[in-house]
Image 1 (cartoon, rainbow, N blue to C red):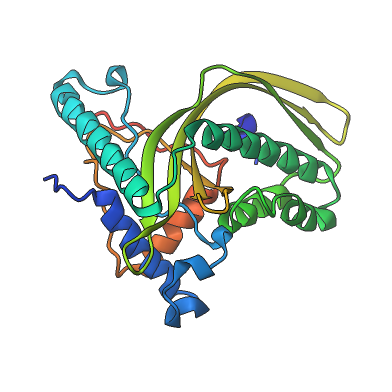
Image 2: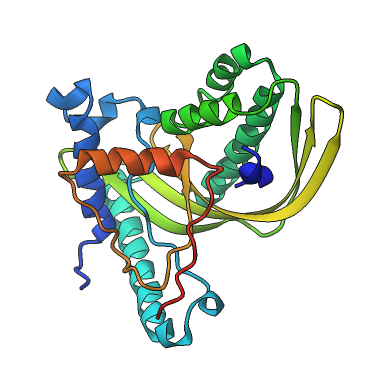
Length: 280
């Protein structure tokens, strides 16, 4: 997300809808809400990124022999998104607000970075509380916890500042995923938005040394949205999919440990991307 990484067979029913149902059931089962499967009664911030959603990779980053398969997968992903939009409209009778959702994604993204940087510059005993207070209505629980862990590892006495120089490209929604309730009616959405920005980061050590870097960053940010209350939270990030995996994420709804581990991993916004696969 930032330059701080170095310092600290297709069915008509979209697979993402099936995945969402099983993921949410798993999330409920791990909490005291297990006896009440109505997810609308759960705070929105407890939902992390529920799946490794498909993000079409750039053709030039993939072996040429994989291009025909990648074309098919792009079309499949587009079909899944289209079906998801149709289902959302049918279930909720609400309009789509892509521009508002993308704008809020940017706002949450910027505030999250600024809060993290300011927390790193504060005393260690104040960092945890500051992040929780400032991001209560901005980010999900998993993201907040991950940021707290990162901030505590930042050296005492050093200072970090972050600045958004500009948004290089218009944000683009790459994955639209309705999240149904126990009655199979959509109540939430998980949106994956591609955000390309130019960012500036300045690190000042406790000895007074200052290093400023400016770089282009592309993120695929995952947001959970309650379209009825208009609440929207940043819950994680994912990376471009490789040329081998299929559109439907591999997921075992019975493996709660795997699901929890993925939500925690996706919530760490400053983690390193996976190594590129070179085999065809």
